[in-house]
Length: 368
Image 1 (cartoon, rainbow, N blue to C red):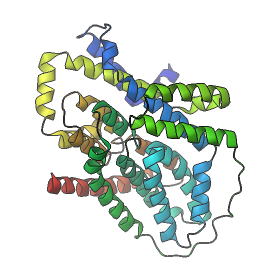
Image 2: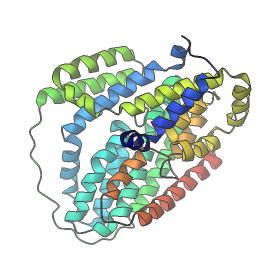
Image 3: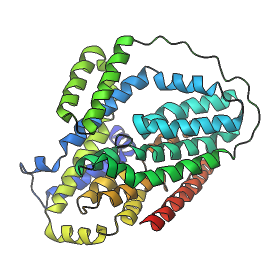
Image 4: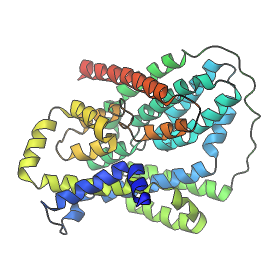
């Protein structure tokens, strides 16, 4: 029983999505039509990208690049700026989750070595915001973008035209806030690491990532990517499959079923369409604060054709509460292990998130 309770606490979003799907089945009995609800393309792309990123991350490539780059920093301000920019730009390719899993613990160790634990809350908060906002600039940066880009069959030009202004504003704000760090000199943070990579695995994941990009941009069918990932990983690096976030995949499946069933209940479909239609950004932001932005994107997509507005809403909606973006919980879990005030972290986190959210909403009001 304790294991079940612990699992439910750990996977709250998965548990809630399962309950919602289960309840909806009483109104729309299971049938072969359920398969039509599920976006197998999104699931295939998401699984493939998570597997590829898990493999590259396991090899330590991202941490090595970060450490060697940070050896060039001489001041606390420089270190803060580099860490924040690393999270912002890397998240565009390796996803916000992987960026935070990689760089937050690395930053914690780095700040301890520099005897700058007092800056930990500020730096980790900015890194979290940077990963969430940087990831919105590419279709593969986060799960909600991958889903919306695929589900709405968006063009590359429409995607970047929609989201670029918010990413640029966010980048500017991140640089400004990073400059609030002091100019104190730092000792050398460590010698340049020499690591010998498995060239076979490195080549394999590089090729798979190239195939993944071609699949995301619809040059190749996602089945080609999925088959390549499964075959090559099973042969050369099968243990990496244990690193994949399967709970996220099942969350998608349950939400697809839930939203599909809602769409088949005429009264609810009509009511939700009226609420969401024309209010995609505001509803996306508000829904993200409660459900998190990935479930919000899936839930709301069934009731609007305005992909651009919904994408803006759920991306900037990742700012705000701690659960607005599930990636933010990654940073929080690392912070919980340190000797810092959790209340202070939550206060700083919420304050800075609200500032960034307000700025992005103000931009939306101006450009809409």
